[in-house]
Image 1 (tube, helix red, strand yellow):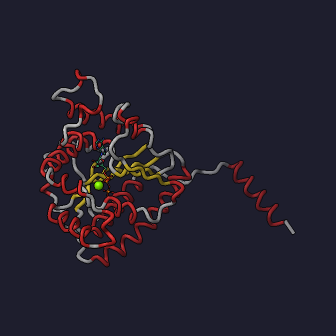
Image 2 (image 1 turned 180 degrees about the vertical axis):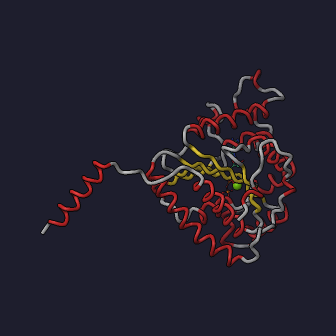
Image 3 (image 1 turned 135 degrees about the horizontal axis):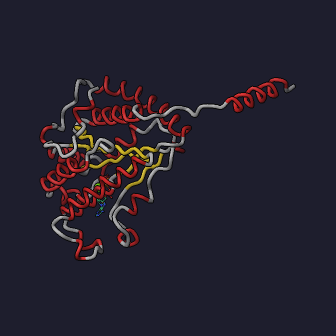
Length: 287
Ligand code: ATP
Ligand code: MG
């Protein structure tokens, strides 16, 4: 699949309206996409096993989206074949008192994947240039007043780019997904959560409130994506009105990104080979 179409260039003139949330690439059937996803899940498991054995790189996968866009479902389906021992999912909620007592990247740093591991952020430090900006929450972040200037968002974009570059230069590869749904699709999904008893638990009246800020969020997402999509840590805008397409595309991007890494099972030295040979002999000689 041509994933380049969904990768956003740094400081490009990309507009979110360029990518229609209901598009499905060259796939017109859910069945074909699901078959491909099964294969991709297997391939991801193979690549993860090499990543873990090599124990040098780690992969950080960030999901950002409006409510109901399908972050949870995508994480569940795309990651279903991964080894739980080498995968860690962290969800970012409203910051706790302890978290607010630190800089905004602190809680992310604490939850970064170790070498060999895949870390998934369900929301992330990007909330600090999104929800915090939309709802004007800077004052609750206990930042010294002289640093709260009109430039603060540009400064945060730079801090985030620098942070991700630092991670990259130390072996952590970051991939960022924005699951892009339409406002109509969100309405449909919210109504489903109200009407379907098995989905009632997912409904939150707060989502209806956030929906009123839809345009504000999209404007900020667009700016954030353009300002922080770099070669080392690209953003992918994933059309997400069709869940089956979003899941497939996410899996394609993860595979391509992992395949581009210099990963391989660790090579074995001459001495180690001899040890293996000797041990095999011993085992075979056992009565
Ligand atoms: P779901 O609703 O699918 O379970 P969710 O990610 O929306 O998942 P919630 O518990 O509903 O989870 O929401 C978490 C909330 O925390 C979001 O509204 C998000 O914007 C907010 N949040 C995350 N980080 C911050 C932050 N740094 N400052 C303020 N609010 C934040
Ligand atoms: Mg929510």
